[in-house]
Length: 184
Image (cartoon, rainbow, N blue to C red; front, side, top):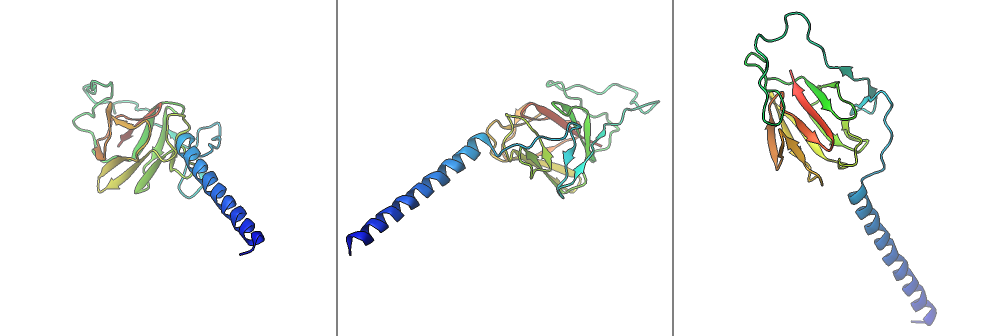
């Protein structure tokens, strides 16, 4: 081989090596810091899977005699257990604390992805939330919560989730600084 051919092969190999290094650095950066976060509208609208913005409706405020005769029991973590006559099928996800506290999102889909990514069904803009943090999936009348190997974890009623767990209604789920519940 001529020296010119050898020089071109060396330069090509060096460029290929740098390309791999930049790809590794990019992958590490997105794992450590997440994907770039887009600012949500100031009204805190939730992102729907079809890409359209939906204006969340506030959780209904009970009026009149719709309150149970006895007050709901409170768990050790402060979450309310459902009254004995409550429906067991969850129809709404209600954010109880965090940036969008008081927001209610209807559970129309079979699966809800939760995270900082704009691709998520339920976007949480929080530095303690992973890009793809957790997943809620419907299985009949039940909802199953799976932590997607997030850095800071997902807590169900104060206990860190490992694997997939069933989520009872009125049980607090904490991701980052946001807490929400499934409600009938």
